[in-house]
Image (tube, rainbow, N blue to C red; front, top):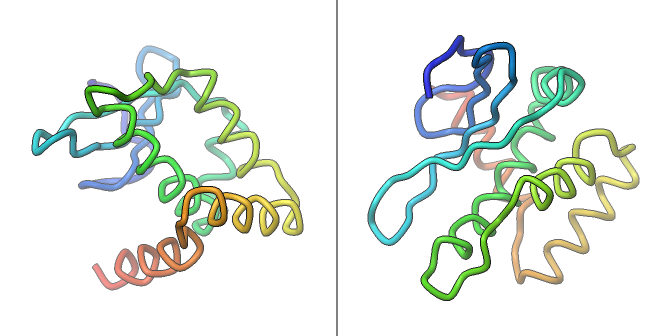
Length: 127
């Protein structure tokens, strides 16, 4: 997807302005092949992603395994609606709601997205 890069680089989530639409793209390893999943976002989403690196990282770490699962042969497609539901749980949430979302996500998925997000941000700032 070509456009003007607004956020991100490399193998992390990126946001591009493509013909006036904001597109959040996440590289996904699908059975050894790197592909990208793209979702439209709003200007308000972009503002949060730019202003709050932790929410940027939480969205990434929550989204990545869901997209990988969707890429399996038996996986259910992950839609724009699914993305919007997840983004709405992370980006505009207050701190208490975000903490509750992370705890619920971790419990439901056997994950530690808060620790993964912290590690991602630590490594990101080191580069």
